[in-house]
Length: 355
Image (cartoon, rainbow, N blue to C red):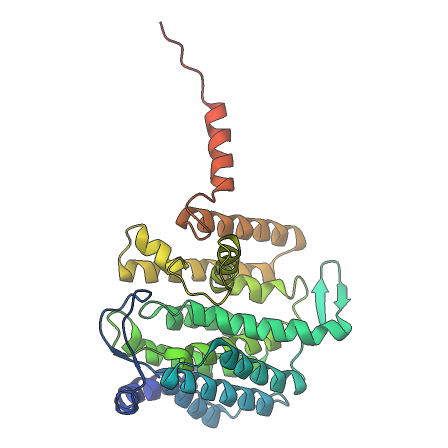
């Protein structure tokens, strides 16, 4: 049944996206090129509406049952409305944030919360009152992280698809029917849209799609990893390592340069890779590969012993730091780890004596 829902959501979204494109152009939901953007021509946005419609059709097909279903749907509708209005009239940052807070508040009130964190050696950290702000921060953080990587054709849709493949696979392994159903439905809808969004894109997902995907991924990951026996909070963090790292280092970059946190720039991961000489498609595929690497690391982490998990975690942290330094995500001068290894390498080279 999951496979059928995946295929049907893919086909429905693929077929409905051209209709959404016409609708977007008719109502003026278009994206004009400027100095910050990579595209050079006017593009229809609002493509996330096709993803949302495909998702709703998938829910009708599978009809997953859970006490969290209604809050998730209400929160998703709030996010879709927020994204739709932004694609139409470009809302200010505070209004977009208000919509995200409202959507997050609905699911938190409905019981979707990080109430505890599983620790190694069968330990458990109860969060108490801190559960609500942490859950709110997670939902808003992941929502904006997906939104921020939506800078190249097919990038946000492809990264989200890889993340959803990882989450859905783990949910199936764990026997979590509800999370698996939501993940598979959203995956099929996103892949159907990606057919039209991969370079050269015919339509953008806009904030309607990026905010909805970010919101749904944040909520699904919260529901899916509550019972992971080790490092429960780290699993979704590793799966989302690329968008989360891009967002965190964007904050660091703006603090270092004394800029407002909401200030736009052209120093995100995809911008940095383009500056290194990669083409548009090569950049997107490189970020796909990075996301797949961290997804595989997360899967291995859930299936490994404690000490193997620690090794995987260390390798993951080193990989993130290397990517950040290599592409210049903070700045071209920020390379402490690379410089450290170069010093070690140079110190081990034999001295050459002149005759």
